[in-house]
Length: 426
Image (tube, rainbow, N blue to C red):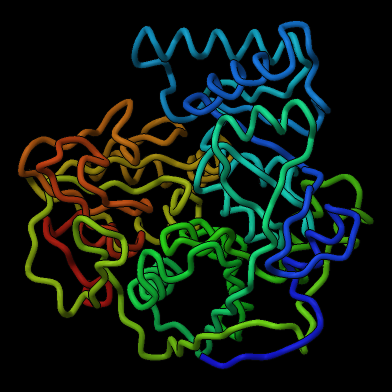
């Protein structure tokens, strides 16, 4: 690890703007929030906390900056979930908060695709994978529901400005090796707590060439190495993604800032020229092996989707690996696009039909099996190959089940063979 000094990092610049003062890493600042997100699991506690803090007749600080989505238990899978949905709908109506309600998709896909995230902005969400929005050059981080209640009341929150760890990703990926494999390798090398409270900034030639969906996959998993945020420097790719989603071009341009060359950062380096597909073995995300070192492992279920890998690029890649072959006998394949928009793209490309003809189940856009919620739970002793972001004990059902994390290419290849399969060999 090398050390570089002076100037300001991208994250420091964002906090300087949000706090309206000069701020360096290690300093505490009260920062103004640009966008706050809640969903159907974390939202009810935030709403109740807001009323406790501000009073039953209080109004939120700025309803135009709050976004609400239902994605974890949707459609409602229990009476409690239905009651939570009613509570949140009533809150949104009362406060004038934008509510995407049901069937719009996973929060971490919908919020950026609807234009709520700008480069250079400070975004908080009551969900740990809010760091996904760092793909667009925002400082985005997850907070607890009680902290969110405070944000609802004041529009501000205390932060310690984090130090920056630049993850230099160089080289070119082989065919059928993806950004998911890159971030799994990084997490495997750094460890689950190796970037605690750091702003992980993804840099280098390979990072710069990633599409926004690929960047979202990488930023999404920054929390799995303990990072406070996972951020890409905004560039022409960022602007191109946002120009059709944000009405004010000047707002996009204003956020296109980079880390100064003489800023104080630490660095770690990877060359991905020879990277092979990676697998995170149960029951930790940093328990990562190259696929060539993974034992011959039978799978009972393949889950393609989630806020990590549920976009059109991911579905297309998995479908290409399947080559029109049926899902292996004895294997359940569950496909869940990340949003209604991504679902419609897949529908128009004929991918939904291809997956269905292969024997897969294609479900409405939601979190699906990722958090062991509405459907797709694993029974005792079963194994699932998943494109999601966590494989903890009990994450997708029985505490005696096993979850392996992989890329969409590996998921597609494994679905037709019935065991964990290198997509380069299909």
